[in-house]
Image 1: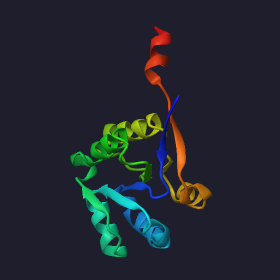
Image 2: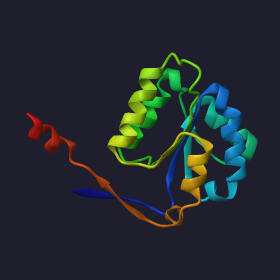
Image 3: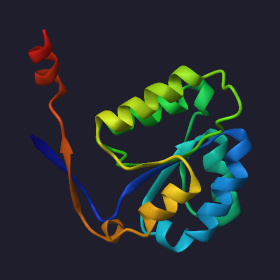
Length: 149
């Protein structure tokens, strides 16, 4: 099994659906000190709103429906994003739901920490692993697929 290091200074993607943006901004504000020690990126308006509300630099990509979710997924696959905070709205159908599912699939495939609500984000951020390097396993799915054939 191959491993990759998630360094103490992490690359964290911040994403929120429209009805959850205020919740994410409130959470980021509460965790601003910790987040300031990491590299931040996010999709379109979420990144812009977080920067405006907190002053934290957040590299903005396109909005989720315009390819931003796919871009974050590609960054995860390229090992350039190693932590995902995604406050999604479970009560509203999104026009880009397939993109969201693909993003979450990639996050699981590349074995990165994912928080989809405040409680999970709080638990992850209170972990001692936030301040240290972590060797994450990258599973060899190709060999698992071949064994099933």
